[in-house]
Length: 336
Image (cartoon, rainbow, N blue to C red; front, side, top):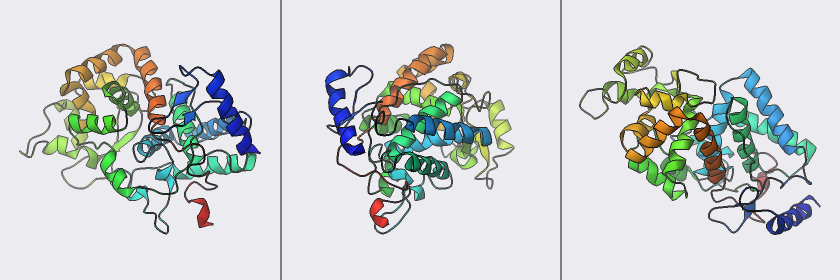
C-alpha cells in the first residue's frame, strides 16, 4: 500500500510541481526526487530524523560534521545510494575499509538508530540513502547553517565499491585540478566545489591528513609556504614528524562547532588546515574570488551551499524499482 501511494505521489508531482524548487531531476537517471515523497507513507519521517540528530548533537558536538561527511562520501561513490553504510558480507567489500573512510568515518550507529525508529513508525518505507540526506541537512541547520528542502525518494544499493571510495573521493593532498575533475565527474562544477568545501567550517581532521604541510610539502624537506607559519608552529606542537597520526585538529579553529563563513576567512589568512582547503585560495583565480566573496558575505555562502547540497544529493540515485529499502542500513535485505 505504501509503495502504491509513493508511486501515485510521484506521478502527481511530475504534473503539479515546478522543477524550479520542489521537483528535482536526478543526475544520471530518469527518476525524480521530491520533498513530499513520504508525506503520505511516513509523514513523521523528517521529524524523527531531526529529533534524533538534535539529541546526538547535544551529546556529541562532533556528530553533525560526521553526518555531513557520510552523505558526501556516499554520493561521490556510485551516487547517493547508502552504499557507504554497508558492512562487508558475502560478495560485498565495505567502503568503510577505504582510505578516506578507515579510522575516520563515523556516525554509523546513529544512522542505524534513526533507521530503527523509522522502521517502528513506518516499516520498509524510508531508505537509508534518504536518511543520510536528511541528517546532513539537519546537521547543517542545528550548527547554525542554512536550511533547504531535501528532495527524497532515493532507494538503497545492494552493493558497494571499495575501489570507487578509494579513487573518487577527493583527498586532502590532491591537486586543485584533480579535485575539480573529481567534482566534474559527478556533475558538479567549480562553484559547487568551493561552496561544499565550506562544510569544513565544522569538524576535525587528523594529523596524518596535513602533516606534509608542516614538514615536507613538496618533497624538499620544507613546509608549505601557503600555510601561515605562526599557525604551522601551533600545529606542530600536536602533530610531530612521526607519531600522533590520529590526533584531531579543528578544520576551522575560530568557530569549530558553528556553521558559518569563518572557514573562508581562514583561507584568506592562509590558515586553512588541509592543503585541499588552502588551494581554493591559492591555485585558481575563479575559486579565489569565490573564497573572498564567501569570506565577506555569509549569506551568499549559505545560499550557494544549500543549492550545491541539493545538487550533490541528486547524484545518480536509485529510484522506482531499482535497489531496495533496507530494513537495516548496514546490510542488504537478502542477508536475512
